[in-house]
Amino acid sequence: MDSFTMSYTGICFLLGILCMIPMARHLLFENFLEKNAEKLTDGKNVNLTCTTALESMFDRFGAAGTANFTSGKIVIQYPYCNYLRGFLKNPDYPTQYELWSLNTFTHEAMHVRGERNEQNTECQSIQRNHIAAVLLGVRESTADRAAIRYFVEMYPRQKEKGYFSKECAPGKALDEKLPGAIWQRSSDKYEGKGRWRPS
Ligand SMILES: [Zn+2]
Image (tube, rainbow, N blue to C red; front, side, top):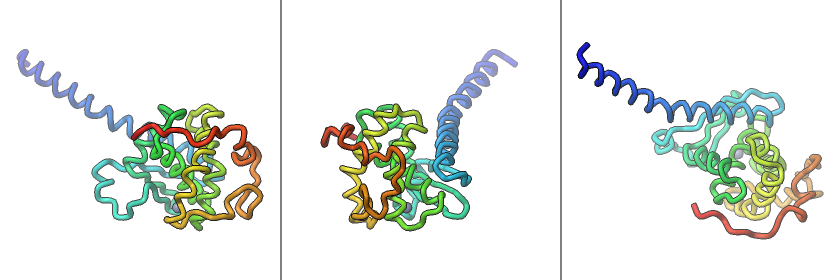
């Protein structure tokens, strides 16, 4: 092999390795989300996929995430997996979409856990978003603040989608009375509507 061919082969090999890095990162993140989603589903198996940018472009449903109740397959759309990465990098000062992506992760896990009704699913998610954030590596106090902020500021906007229920509140019908539920502590942790990091 002459020196030109050797250099050419070396460059191709290096480019090949460089191209594989984003794919490996993608797979590792999916695996990380999948393993932690399973901790929220009462032992039900999860198969979680983050779509690629191209797959997201052809998505017909327009939802941030979907779950198959029987197979445990969760699909999170490309932008929301990216927002979730962003949330995990900067959980103290998230964008609205980043906080939304945390709830998408928890919400879809609640479907796999067995809930089909959207209002119940969303309320179960609200009562576990702080647990999900801690599982994903967020400090407990930050996770609590993020979960409370979702409940206070973003949940009311779910009315248009039909995910909101007046019964999802402390002492109401959808209160699962989980130990350490965010709304039992919200007055200590929530400092009022803060600024969102611009997206
Ligand atoms: Zn749902």
